[in-house]
Amino acid sequence: MKLLLVCLGNICRSPMAEGALRARLQASPLAGRVQVDSAGTGDWHVGEPPDRRAIACAARHGVDISGLRARQLQAADFDRFDWVLCADEANLRDAGRLADAQGRDRLALYLPWAALRGGAIPDPYTGGQDHFEQVWTMVDDAAKSVVARLLHDADSGIIEP
Ligand code: 4NP
Image 1 (cartoon, rainbow, N blue to C red):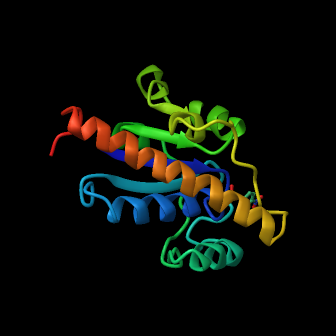
Image 2 (cartoon, rainbow, N blue to C red):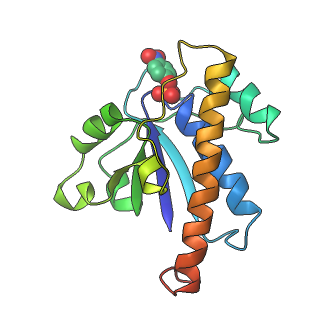
């Protein structure tokens, strides 16, 4: 199973979501069986580490995301990943422009896909620490939900060992 988390800049929401999900997977029986990556629909921050506020927020929760580097979403990602999971509707629309019909079947809004209430993960870029904390709560709740869902799928034989 390969999951790609997508936001606009790939320096705030999707790296935080990637870090939270990696950490939850690592601590579960699914360790080593699910690959997680992130990308942005925009190219402004390609090659950069996550925003220092995102790094600090993740670190407060025991997760190191400082080694991640931003990259831009590519059409080929729809062949490489089982799911392309977007932070908000604008990301969904922009990502959809890169996908063919098959790719669009792999495209979803992350929180509803994770079976959580709520739609978009709000962009914290112009906000303060509290906005980053809110994002962390959302992406960590999503990570817990995804692990539970994938564990259920693994028990059902849907995920190959
Ligand atoms: P992200 O946040 O999409 O969560 O990474 C943003 C980062 C940078 C910009 C916008 C949103 N920007 O306009 O540079």
